[in-house]
Amino acid sequence: MQKTFAMIKPDAVSAGYHHNILQELELGGFAIVSKARVQLTRARAAEFYAEHKGKHFYEKLVDFMSSGPVIALVLAKEEAITGWRTLMGPTNSVVAKEQKPDSLRGKYGTDGTYNACHGADSPASAAREIKFFFPRLILDPLPDPATAK
Ligand code: RTP
Ligand code: MG
Image (cartoon, rainbow, N blue to C red; front, side):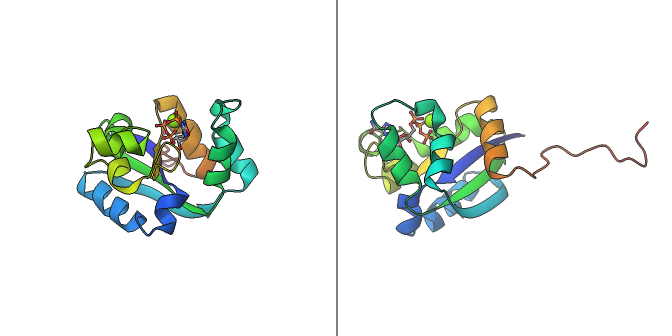
């Protein structure tokens, strides 16, 4: 079982599409390990997407991601990282609507920025992003101190 970090972005939450997305991901075989509805400050959104700092879309992205509540998720499934990105579809929702109309971004996103959801793109990103939102989450069971040698 692999874990990934996913997020339902402010556009989808404010439109009420998070209900649909949560239902679709469970039907897709993802288990929800953790779920939190949170509002990112501008500074937290900037930190979350720091890898894109300096790109032309960065300021707009940070404004968007701090514009309303998001739903942060830790999901578990075999091959969860690639599986979730496949379910989301292409980054740009205009492209997604053309090429993958049944994907989450095809159905619930609008354009290249307002695209309904996020997914970690590698095991390292997933670990960083899970810690960013759920710093107290213990992902793997610790050995039982009573029986550990
Ligand atoms: P994400 O990180 O949100 O899961 O999306 P991604 O990997 O598919 O795409 P990425 O390149 O990491 O871009 C992060 C987010 O920035 C916004 N964006 N806007 N040209 C644009 O206006 C543009 N390009 C990217 C999107 O919200 C994208 O998901
Ligand atoms: Mg990305």
